[in-house]
Amino acid sequence: MSLNDRNERPIGLARYEWGEEEIAAIREVLASGTLTGGPQTARFESAFAQRHHVEHAVALANGTVALTAIYLALGIGPGDEVIVPSMTFVSSATSIVHCGATPIFAEVDPVTFNLDPVDVGRRISKRTKAILLVHYGGQPADLEALVAMAADAGVWLLEDAAEAHGASFNGRPVGGFGKAAMFSFTPTKNITTGEGGIVTTDDAVLADRIRLLRNHGQVAPYQHASLGFNWRMTEMQAAMGVVQLGRLDAILARKRRNAEWMRSRLGDQHGITLPRVAPGRDHTYMLYTVLVHQNRDAVMGHLQRLGIEARLYFPPAHLQPIFHELKVSLPVTEMLATQMMSVPFHSLLTAEELEVISQAISSGIKSSAHQNLAHDSVQA
Ligand SMILES: Cc1ncc(COP(=O)(O)O)c(C=O)c1O
Image (cartoon, rainbow, N blue to C red; front, side, top):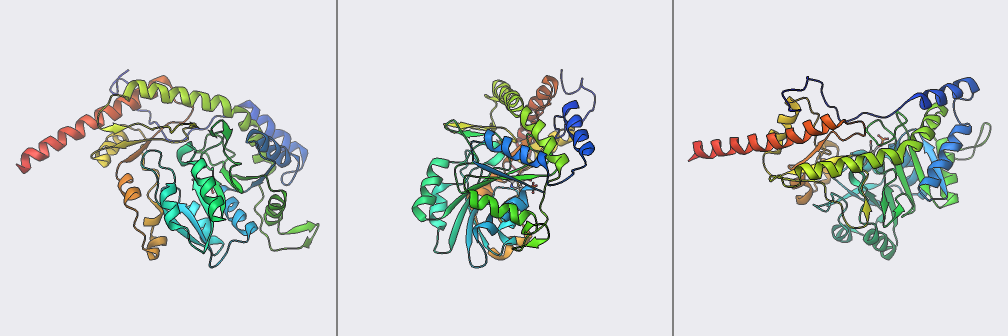
């Protein structure tokens, strides 16, 4: 099937899997009369903890507050610094600001787009309290180096695993490599509860503190021992989460097969670099991000005109207006942001849609190369 043959149905970035099981689970919650703070939340937490080989999981309203809850529970606040990559969703960094601490942006590795341990080493100071790594797009960061570095520096290692449910490093699931980790369940993720987040940790005290923060610091009905928030996940979301978690391994298997197919199609295509998986990592392809060597915006525009929702994930956080005053320059991240392009890669893509996406990438590269030649000859 060629691009011209297909009808004009757009191919969006995010589609989630759901079925009768989710509806049944949510209906059961509605019939139970307990819509928040009940057995489904506990069930989701224990299933998620088990799947990620950790002792505790605490479900929250979303991933951003889950990160802030971790910092608050660890006592990170004004005067403290947290090292974070800039090639990430902005709330990896704004969650640090929400608790009064300062994000220190660091470079990423140009191959995996994950935190560069060497650059992290340069940025550790007396004020550093934690390193927040991000498993970019679902590929685990360099956990071996970063675990060792955090231990040497005497700071906490934290994982932003928002995009990496079920990813593993040397056979071990992410989520348990540092003091705590966060996962998000927005609809772009491999599994979703609409909104939602979860903290995983092996530290029982930390998990209890986060439970208190989540529920107004309430130790008994209307007894508030500490300052807290309403950061609870609803029972409907948790019930959906249990079903979604059951789908995770099939979703990941399908995405990995699709990634192999893309490699068989585009592996020899000049002008782009396909996602590269570092040794020992199991990528979960929440994002499928290629590097377009020249004219990325023209290639991305070509895909968009064909109804394919290609996008830069992410405009670097340190260049956002809210962080201008930090005056940070990160040449590797800024260069990558001119070349990165994420294309739809959800688990429901059909063989036809994959074909259309791969053809569009090839034709986009060819047509932008022609434009270059034409431009060069006009210049000459
Ligand atoms: C890397 C990363 N960090 C943090 C978040 C924030 O999570 P949420 O949208 O659930 O607040 C997201 C996703 O949205 C993300 O992709």
